[in-house]
Length: 265
Image (cartoon, rainbow, N blue to C red; front, side, top):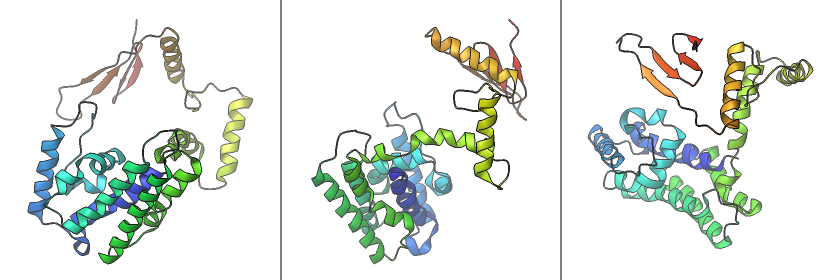
């Protein structure tokens, strides 16, 4: 189970979406939503320079929030941003998610103390009970979040350590292999057989290189790694207002949204 996403997307995102769009879940007025946007813009100027991404305006982009925006809002911004705007009981309710995650979150390989997992379980349980009192619908991910402390106890490591991030890069291989919805397992099996039987060259993420351009890119990348050199990438955007050309220049190649060609040395 992706524990962090159960908290951020399964619970937190649904709660703040209710504040923006759902009248029965404490929808905020346009004026209050504007105040939240202003606070996000202000605190965005005060964030550490290591945080290279900004949180978009909540009034217009809450449905488009990515995982990093939800995590940043949950862990760092939510109290100063929502204080004195949302109802006190609603703010206390979502703060319980932050409380639980501060106790069992992180990517430490060391076991989390049983007192912390017990307190996190109580915080999430109270969060769910308050949702029922506030007449907010209970969803499957809401229930799943209650078992995250159990996973932390069973796996003897922090919650983010239990996530399946390492497997997400493999999904692209399967998506490329599946051409139709008919017999997906057989399709993936055939692609792997073709790759090993005919020794097709593959990229670092396992995709079959079906052009000489991809092959030469992988060769250039391997040479850079072997020589322990930094890959210098230059971004350029054309001046045309309509359909501007964006160009990315690598040591031996130039990539643009118009064409892809090798630089003549």
